[in-house]
Amino acid sequence: MSGEASAPPATSPRAPRPGIQKSSGAVTKKGDRGAKEKPATVLPPVGEEEPKNPEEYQCTGILEVDFAELCTRWGYTDFPKVVTRPRPQLTFAPSASTSEKPTLDDQRLSGSCSLNSLESKYVYFRPTIQVELEPEDKSVKEIYIRGWKVEERILGIFSKCLPSLSQLQAINLWKVGLTDKTLTTFIALLPLCSSTLRKVSLEGNPLPEQSYHKLMAADSTIAHLSLRNNNIDDHGARLLGQALSTLHSCNRTLVSLNLGFNHIGDEGAGYIADGLRLNRSLLWLSLAHNRIQDKGALKLAEVLRPFELTHIEVVERRRLLLEKGSQERSQSPSTSRHGDSKTERDKNQLMGVSSLALVEKDKTQTVKTPKGLGKKKEKSGEVVKKEEKSGPGQSPTQGTPKKEDSAKAGKGKVTIPEQKLSKGKGAKTGSKEKRSILMESELVGEATEMVNPLLEPVEHRDGKVFMPGNKVLLHLNLLRNRITEVGLEAFLTVVQYQAQFAKSKSACKGPVGLLWLSLAKNCFSPQCPANTMIQELMLPRDPINKSKHKEEEPVASCT
Image (tube, rainbow, N blue to C red; front, side, top):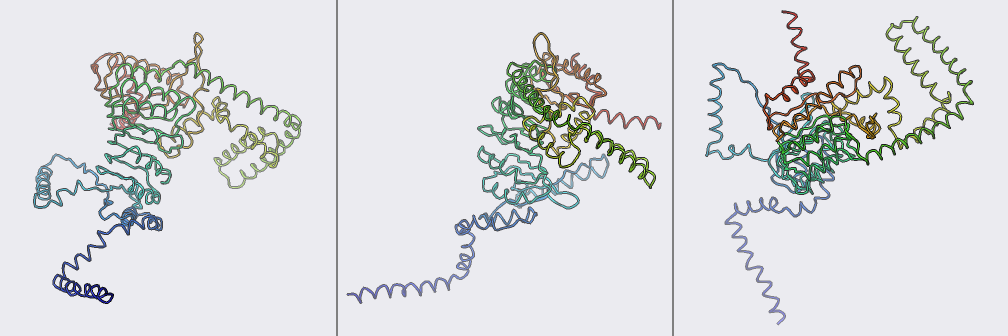
């Protein structure tokens, strides 16, 4: 029985073997096709190697090559291609030759979009990654993704290939199906990218939790943020307003914020206005195409002129002033003890250094030094003298530890030396430099040295404390809302106040308030007196209008 039991297994493999050989011999082409299709369809082996292959690959800095290679390593067979973003051709000239061009273009378009060529018909709708390149070295400057869902695995691929792009400046995601989870993954990706990345646009990506405020965290480096068409309502505006500033925190990197085409009403505008109370970095704000009425307009206008501090803000201001006084008192005994005992020695050393510096200057001026360089050296010598006078000791071994001690004592309050400098000439140039830096949105880290707005000079009226208002905001767009003449009058008072402030502080180079204000397409007549007065007051403040006048003046003088 054992021999009979072992015989059938021996004969059963033999019986099918000829059949398998015949079938494979009869249908060789199908077998070859099946063999070729097996490695493409069997993706689990590639999926098993996912953790190893993407980590082993070193990106080259060429997005087209890196993205394709990483997608294949992650098991994608069909993935978007990286293409150069097409630029619109703005060649419209009324001539006989251009009148024939549209007909030729229409013929080409109809030929490419014919029913016989389905592939060319839907090329425009295929998922692609459009990039804008630098003209010099052809490196990727901006990335545009439109109309296809970006999953978390794609973001994982981006986290590996985007950090190698050293010149990346902007990422634009339009209707890519983001969720609150994928948004957190995208935010974790941003610190890995180059330090040149300053612009992020997430448009047409409504989120259930409206967690867009995470893009404006304290450690964020984004300077330009666009959140249009995201169905942001008053709840989302409250989160964004808190991200702009609160009593104990403030965003110091964001320069422009676009909240157009959303569902923000009066309450949301009030939350944004609360965020502008203590924010001194935002220069550009758009709330166009929302649902803001007079109540929200009054809230926004209130922040742009002197406003009353709340009780909590007054308490916080007193606390900051007490901290400032305590730090000044803690620094004064150390300087008095060591400084008084060494005053005569310090003076003698200063006199010796100054005499040596004068002798060296005379020598350098007599030997091949132009006048301009001599003046610069004199100024630098004066700065050295001032620094030496301010220090308690003159030797480098004694001066350095005392500077470190003062820095340690001032860590809790960075705004103390800056507020002292606000009275001198240095604060004027510093504020101008900070403003230009914020406008360029390149070195936004300088904004961290700004003075706390609660320590700005205030006015006391009838037992109340008034702040001068936010004069850092330069551009405000309220196009196509529901503002009537009541809200328009509030903005008229703002423009009048800021215009008078600019005239009185003409010598000062600090912020002067709005330079551009748009209130068109609201619920009031464009010919109403308040609107015409606003236009007249804002016209000379508009920098674009000023540049046009400057260009027209030499032309008129030549004629």
